Image (cartoon, rainbow, N blue to C red; front, side):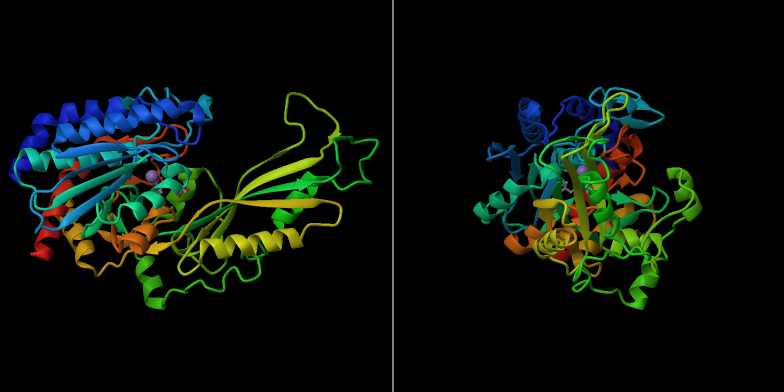
Length: 456
Ligand code: BES
Ligand code: MN
Ligand code: MN
């Protein structure tokens, strides 16, 4: 639509400046040191909602970080789009690997470099700007509700409670989220599923204190050695996970579904080159796309213990720790998998050590059907602005709240993401292409328009 294009063209510099301003706020949800910044960011999001034309916008306090809610109801008879996103970001460390400050956004070669540029400030903000575009050009086709949270990166615990307490307020026809990625700008795609998550922390204790590794070494179980052995045993020679019952509920894809999935453009050589790895790794019998999109995984996220300072200290440590996450696929259940893990991990502990397992957050896997009117509206929107039909893909990441949108609010979700896999989300030098940012703002209004048509 020309009015949208014109409005975007006239305001594009401001749209970019406003995003950069938001990126300067270090809204790291995991680190309590940033609590004030997180709150300041919530306030900024609220002000942007009001400036864009929301009838009301509020910062809703929770037991953790606040949720920002805004809405504009133009006609109760029209369909309602509930936009979800998050304004919190991952910690920026390791800082020394950034080429510029994580909270001092710079634009280089058409890319915005900053923590949160893609995940999810850049993508979330596209919705506020697209709403402004529609509102200021009097072309809103749907009622709009926006719920932008501050705890996605730490598991969305309080948002679940917020949903339960606000079922009426959040009534809508669809949830729309931009917090996933596309194959490329040449090959636009829409993710039609997310993996679930079970995140565990383990503590292995050997002797009651750190020991001299000469005096005691060879005679007492070293908890770090034992932990490594236990972790190594969690995959077999085919890289299957060895936890009994782990795969019991996994739904195998039909041959046709696998076929479709593997039709997506994917260059294995390019993939390896980009990551500087000589070979990929994974479960025997599956392609890389299947491994990330449709298969469950187990990964150590961090492991520590003993002496890691400068130089050498000869010590047989008392304790060893690891953080271990499992990505889940339909129909695995986070709680069940975390119990299977705990039982198994305790069972494989050798007699010389004791093991403590603590579950962290989890989330359920979801699939978003490609034959729904909402998905079709998203596909048409992509077609309108990219000139190509989007390819349906299965994403490997997790957005735990999406399963609750369905179970608590009875709402389906459309994942209209504009990130790229190499945007370095959660890594140093996170970026988001300015082109993608504008493309998102251009595409979202078409979703509202086409979604309204499916309901007319
Ligand atoms: N936006 C990501 C999830 C994502 C990224 C989905 C790319 C698909 C493609 C989200 O912010 C995220 O990082 N989620 C966490 C889970 C959370 C419980 C910490 C994840 O996937 O690790
Ligand atoms: Mn995200
Ligand atoms: Mn994230």
